[in-house]
Image (cartoon, rainbow, N blue to C red; front, top):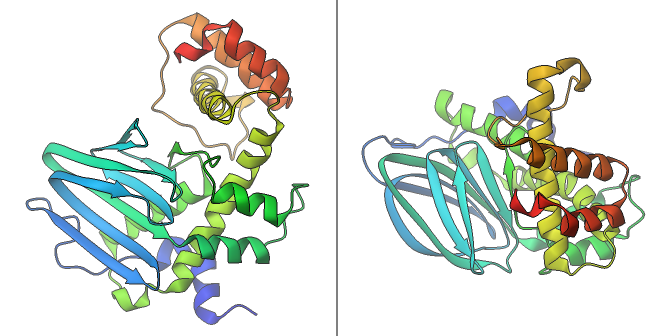
Length: 285
């Protein structure tokens, strides 16, 4: 049976979580506030200048509320802009840089991998034929998809948006941030990433890095098509489908390639997707 606190958070998470700190999201000085519970952490930052090494502590969520945070992890650059977050596991390290005339505001959440394992073990997923062991290995291996997401496109993103709103508008003591909060975050990660694992696994004959690259570009193509349909054919969109408003491609060829690839994705024809990856200009997206 769920505890009272757990039930309250799950049913009312958009109202339940915020953080009382006098200078939280300060507009005029560098602020870095950390809550640590067991081996998890919740960090609120408001910084104009910041240059530090970055090593993912378990699963790392790096969410930008306002501004740009620039990460370089395992040799790859990740400029994270307003309303986006980066999700990585503990196989990534590098550095983070913030340089701005105005304070860049962000939220970073680190979750111990053991909690992901525990949540996987307690979650029933009828939509996948893969075992908990296979999924568990994916979450903790170099095959995990390091990726940027828009906060309107995922279950975790919606939670982060609501968390931000509560930080700005309400007060609650840090003692009320408990393990239950991190448990719910872990659930959202699994809810979003289990289908990603399934789709990556379905791509045949490509190296893991190429599979990841193809998936990211398909995601960008889908986001662009959502924008196009929203602007010109809104009736074709499902009512609950979120729309990313930050990806714009400059020419019809890229749009057409993205459309074809997204159509392939919806048909789960990953072999054809691989062919398109090498035969078209989709790699320029």
